[in-house]
Amino acid sequence: MQCEMRNTKQAKMHEKIVILDFGSQYTQLIARRVRETGVYSEIHPCTVDTAEVAALDPHGVILSGGPCSVYDDEGPALDPALFELHRPDGTPVPVLGICYGLQAMAHQFGGEVERAQRREFGRAQIDVQPNGGERSQLFADVPSGSTVWMSHSDHLTALPDGYEVIAHTDNAPVAAVRDTDGPYYGVQFHPEVVHTDFGHQILENFAYEICGCNGDWTPASFVEEQVRDIRERVGDRHVILGLSGGVDSSVAAALLQRALGDQLHCIFVNNGLLRKGEWAQVQDTFRGHFDMDLRTTDATDRFLARLDGVTDPEEKRTIVGNTFIEVFEEQTEEIAADLGHRPTFLAQGTLYPDLIESVSFKGPSATIKTHHNVGGLPEELDFELIEPFRELFKDEVREIGRLLDVPAPIVDRHPFPGPGLAIRILDAVTPERLALLREADAIFIDELRANDLYDEVWQAFAVLLPVQTVGVMGDERTYENVCALRAVTSVDGMTADWAHLPHAFLGRVSNRIVNEVPGINRTVYDVSSKPPATIEWE
Picture (cartoon, rainbow, N blue to C red):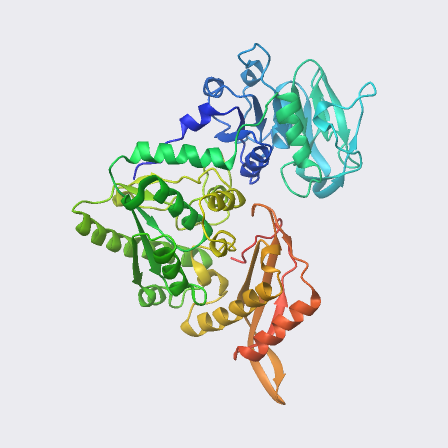
């Protein structure tokens, strides 16, 4: 399979900030936050040659955090030539180091970084220090005492020559620094996460006040550019897309249909792991509203047979992914027979979070979990890959979907994992357990909609636990399954807080599940945030 080519045209059209990835799980979130300011941003590995960075003509550079210490043998180094880049007007290219990025800057230029006596993870209050009675541009309109998000074990103990402290916390004497002679800044905290109250303001200050950007990137401009580039790339050839009915694949289908019309062919596979009513709903929507060429196949028996007895979540993902590819290929051959030739391109609704949590995409990021549509497609499929949303977050895709007239029930739909209900059953997948989980999940979602809470949360679902508990129902002792309910609030899925749903609502949902789903006699509610937990349980 050929890799997707980077959209260099888009990059050249917009003022941009380049983000160098040092392996942080938050790197894509930095890009998302910068784009919220209206400035285009793109990520490159920290190993990229500085000459390549210069060729991108950046208005600024951000150095991400990372899991290493600057003293680790495998720790990525910082090229000092980055601080010699100049813009066309001759002014230096501003640089902002975040967490490890700050430490790498300090270490490179003679500062000292040491292991902190107390690791700092979580919220802290920042004290913004004025300089000569005026704040640094980086902290314009950021009140002293506001909350920032810390996640570090090392810290600065001595600054490089020419640098000064511009903010601190109780545990971090050096929470932010700047070069007194150039536009070079560093922060020990993470302005990109939502837990930093004024993180958006800090990144906006960097983009506008320090980098001099005006903001010319919008979802509408993205659609126009993608439609033009897809048409140019595909020509008169054909594209296939695996349609799930989720936001990502649905909006990708709408975008590709706008660009290509009947050159797009969608495949919808029933893996037996869908939510209640989903098989019929997806077909009705895409054959009706979109009038697409939708090929369907029910492969429930094949998927469940291969999942029989499997409890490990990664093994489940592998089985679901491999079986999907097999069924997808069979459907592709039928399309090829109808066309008289094999389609050239495979389209996917892959997003930034899929990539950062699956593979070392751009830089040395750690793997959290695998996704069947990321990094696991075999060479023998022999398609060219189109992933128009590879650099986008879920909320950006939703906005694009609205611009493309994707119906609200789809564009506002909660995320749903590729392996479906298989990873929400924390045990072997059986038809009986699937039936229990479907009903419990449907009740939860129905009640959220009925109480106008569905759109208030980012994601909500039920999980069937490998636990049975004693209960009393109708004066009889029961020994049945436990169902966990999970609901989170988020902007992009990279960080999330548990949703503070009304107790009365949770009580009603619990009563309905216990009374209406034979086989479940207890429900619990998950009050974990991300981080340290993930949104899904597996």
